[in-house]
Amino acid sequence: MGRLVTARSVNRGKSIFSGPSDAQWLSSCIRKMDAYNVDTTIVDGALSSTSHASPAITQCMILTTGAAVSTNLQQLIKKTKFQYELLKIPVAASGISEKISGNERGIYAVDDTRNIIQLNISSAFFIEKHREDLFRYGSVLYFTGMVTDKVLNFLKFQNNIREITIIVRDFTCLFITPEVLNEYKKMGGKIFVLYN
View 1 (cartoon, rainbow, N blue to C red):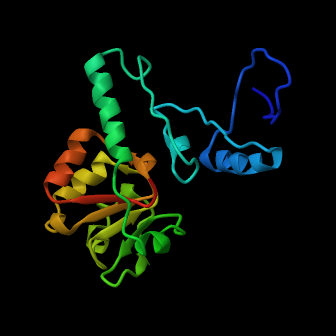
View 2: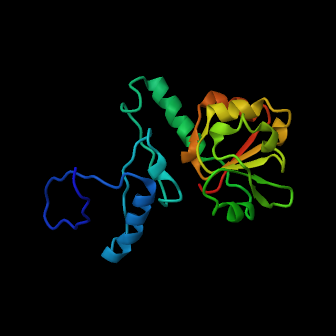
C-alpha cells in the first residue's frame, strides 16, 4: 500500500480504503477526526479480527455476519450467537474498573479490600508455571492481555473455582470457544469486562 492519507472526497467515484493496522493507531486517528469536523467515523472490521470493535476504541458496533464467517448456516448461527454472548458479558463492579483500567501489562489480583496487586506473571501463557502465586492475594484476577481456552481449562480445575473471577478489558481479549466458556461457568467460574 503506501502512506495513509486522511482526505475529504469532493466528487463521487470509487476508491480503495486502507486504515491503521493496530488498535492504538486507530484510536489516535479517530480522536483526530474532530479537527476535520467529522461527526461519525465508521470502522470496518471482521468477525475474525475484533480488536477494532473494542469499546475502548469505538462507541458502538454493528455485528454483521455472512458467508465469510461460514458457508454452513448452523455454524454461522452458532458463531454469531456466541459473539453476541461475548458482547453481553457484564461489566465489573464500579470501583474495581476505575482502579484496574490504567494497568497495561501482566496479570493482577484484586484482594478483598479492592487493592490491585500486580502478580509476577507477565502473561496468561505462564499461569501454570506460577500456580502457587496466582491466588496469593485472592481469587479475582485481571488479565491485561488475551484469555484463551487454555486459561479457562486451567482455572476450572482449581479447588477454588467457585470463587474465581476473571476480569478482562473487553470482549476482544477473549479467544475462547463456547464449550469451554460454558464449562468454566458451569463449574462456578465468573467473568467480567471493564468496558462493553
